[in-house]
Every structure is written in structure tokens, then in C-alpha cells.
Image 1 (tube, one colour):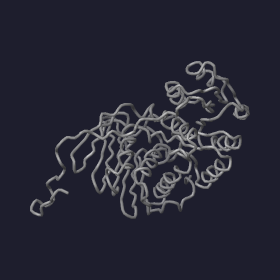
Image 2 (cartoon, rainbow, N blue to C red):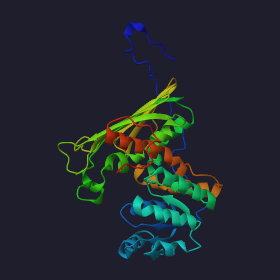
Image 3 (cartoon, one colour):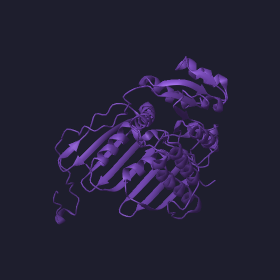
Image 4 (cartoon, helix red, strand yellow):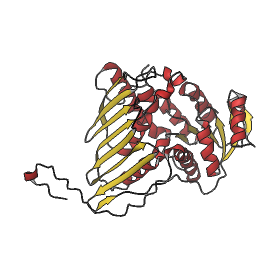
Length: 371
């Protein structure tokens, strides 16, 4: 450990300045050994194009597409999987015995019954995020999947964003020691939701958007237990969207701390930063967007900056389905399982409640997303 002199008041940075080779960590999405699993996608709205684009690149077998709008399903069929059969009723799709996995993309209020019906039909499921709007429902779906002996995963695609995935692997492999602090700040423009259905969601930032950061934070913190969450949200004078575009969250753990900052009204000069402090080193990433990030790892050996390939959109979507297919093939729970998502949701729900009541809230005491 570097010496810190009392004579320089701790102002001298003890970080080793030598550049070292970055550790080779398995941060890229993984595929099963075969591409035999047959997939049906339910919900051919906007985000489905990203799913199907990445599945096509990965050579996954999508054999059925379903949407209440035949036009929407036909559009996706023609663009990505011309041989896929089209359905307008998901129940008809679920009757097919040759479908192994169902990817379900609609919003939570529409999605939960479809997830439940799919599990009842004995299908493995990839659910869109946020997984559920209440923890009780989430636990019930997790138990149902176990009873039916199928895998339930959630499309928390941020876990496979190259910078987040590399950081996650560095933590898991002990390169940082014990994590004592995690700080993330995102400054971008979310005003594109003006006039859309998303602008009707009161907590569009803390819930629909920030769920990615609550989820990855839960991954980074590992065994640390969150004790309380304090959050605020407000409007910017210059924002165009109806809902509040500014939010921040402070999280106290038993032996650590974390903070999240979201500024959804940054019109010029975007910035996205992550900084993780451990007992043996630090790792951080910075860039103008979550698709363009530079990662720096600092340990007593020196500094390293891996040359990462890929991007959150669309590699993250490859990662979530690939992990589910690998888990099915290997007979194990996927790392992005429904159960693994409940911890991040508990923090998210506590943050939303705290923003509403103006007081700290203990995660787990708020069972559902406050309306």
C-alpha cells in the first residue's frame, strides 16, 4: 500500500502511474454450444427490433412472432425472420409444443399475465424489464417457474453493456477486493418522450429508466445489504417533457455507500460516469453516452484501460437471451434470473417512495412501485 504523508494533508495521489496490460475478462455475451432452442417473441413494438436484430446476428431460431397488431408482427417478420409464423393471440402461440423459449416485451401491466401463462405452458421465459411492479408478484412468478422446472430470466440488458460487464467481472474476480462505494451519474436528454405514452409515467426516470442502474448497482454491491435509501426528483426549468427529468438517490449499506444521479435535461455536452471503490483498487468508466465508454482499472500494480468492443445497444440484448439459453443448456439458473432482479427492484421501489415522501426508506418495506 502506498504511503500517505501527514505533511501533504492527503492531497498527493498515491495511485501507481505505470501502465499495465488490462486483465482479460469474459465480458462479452456468451452463446450456447448449439442454436437449437426455438424462440417465440410476443410483442412486436419498438424495442422488439433491437431484440430481433441481435438474435438474427447470433443465429438464434425465432420461429413465431405475436402482436395484437398483425401489421406490427408482419413488419418484424419481413425485416428479420421471414419464415416466422405470425399470431395475434399469444395463447395460440403458447399452444405450440415446438417453442422452447418465449421473449415477452410488452409493458408490465400487459406482460405479467403473459409471463404467467407462458410459465404455466412450460416455456422458458425472457421477460422485458422492469420485471414486475410489485415484489409479491415477482416472488410468485419465480416460484411458479421453479415448480414448472423452467427458467425465468429478465432482460436487464445493461448487465452486458461492455463497460458494466467488464466492471462486473473485475469485481466478481476479486480485483477490487471488497466494494465500499459505487457512484454513477448520467447526464443526457430524455425529452424525446414528450407526447408519448412514456410521458404519462410519473417516475419515468427513477423507475422505467433508472431500473438499469438499480439492477447493475445490486450486481456491483454483491453481498452488501442496503439499509436505507433517500431520493429526490424535480423538474428542470428548461425541460420539454411533462414528467420530472431530474432525480438523485443516496443508498446506505451496512459497510458501504452508493449514489445515483440522473439529469434527463442535458441538451448539450452529455456525460455518463461510473466509479467503483474497493479495498484493493478502483475501477471507473466515463464517456458521452452509455454506448461510448472508456474503462480504467487502478490497483497497486498500476493502471489499465481495456480496449472494449461492442456497445450496450445491441450487445446487451444478445447477452440476456444468450445467458438464458446457456442456463437452459447447462441446467442452471441464469444470472439474470427473476430472483436476481428482486433486489434491484426493492431498492428502486424504496427510492420512488422516498422521492414521494421526502424521507429515507428501507428497501423491502415497499412492496410495489408507488403510484
